Length: 559
Image 1 (cartoon, rainbow, N blue to C red):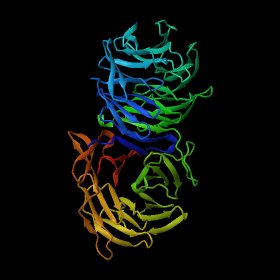
Image 2: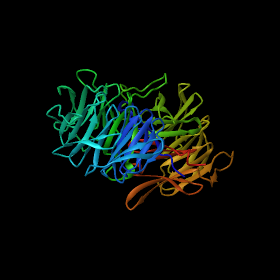
Image 3: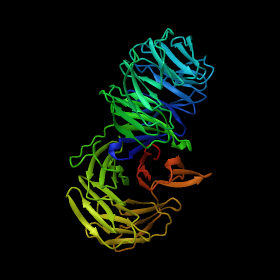
Image 4: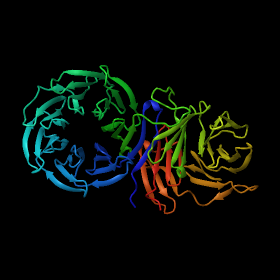
């Protein structure tokens, strides 16, 4: 059964750092990206091209035909023509309706690095490691012009408004040409040039001294530049569709700059990627898509969807990019799959509600909790209950009523985790010796189960039932719902289970179907060794020390 590749990143870092609302994990390196309308195409190191739904992140189709890595993909302005360039020395035209190849263009003697389609849909431009730029007739598939270079050509792009005008780069040299092969200028210094949406300017990255330069396309005059920190990354930049913003990747972070004024302003930084960012593209004027991979593990390869402005409907308190909330980390994640939401809470007592279908934050609340280490939150209708601990004491706060419901003293030796039941009547607490069920109304224990599990990292609740998860010993559970009776040990685990192990000295995390025992998802690299795992119906939420939280949707995998 094919697995949905959708993986949502619910929350990574405070709102002032921007928000990644979805991650699609790839099991091979995503090298190139293109986005049009509600469609995303990803060229992979395996030679395949994955087409994703730009709204949900779900895989629509896989195009197979290249035998080596796909370093570039391009789509015509009307969305009718899709082209790819590969390290197998070929260029392919694809029929996206059938997934078939229309034409394969042969001529380059080394791998193809970049392709572009003219605005009149007549010509394909390509550059290659064979030190040539080639122009191809789309109808016949024939190469009608070759421009020789001294160095390996790395990037090419047609102007979005002039079908005769293209720009390309080899080594650190940027040149502009007319389609007939006539040079427009003597060249500029920089990497990976990209046109503005109206074609009047182009931006490029110059690693010495580390600046992004914006130049006039006609005269080459520099109209703006701003410094960026150089890192070990393939630097790339792109304009937003309205031309107001530029995204640049000088390191493992993505920086967003506002270029509307004479002095460009840095407005946001997106963090959370693996070390190498291969490509970045705006999907709208307020959203971005990027791809990256890790040197250490192909399992770190991912495509991330970023929201530049996170909406919030909450009228109590709202995070904006100007909110100063320090370096708060996510301390808990609560899955309420039946309500299609998940809720996060951080070390500063800020609670956020996220829509599972879109990954967008819909509301945020400030609770009185400070310096939180263990906490949980539950939304019951319009009532939000927040529980946290400090100095072995447990505090219960009702957001709707605006005050503390209860404070529980002296019961726990050292709190490991805390969880609230779905109906808000019980708070489950985990210390080194027992799992306790405490009445929120009275503050008294209604049951406790002795703990015999080593290396516990999370407590999972479902009604009156509670499970304790350990990566070494699996999951064990008890039902606390029988009045005046010790908790009953549970035999049947949740429908999904999580395990964290090592294979050949490489970390590997796996999601299993507990009915069949089948492994249905694998993650490695930075996606191993979580600090919390939550199971809820057909969703799994996994929280990491970095503060990143993954929510995986297996609704089309399990019966």
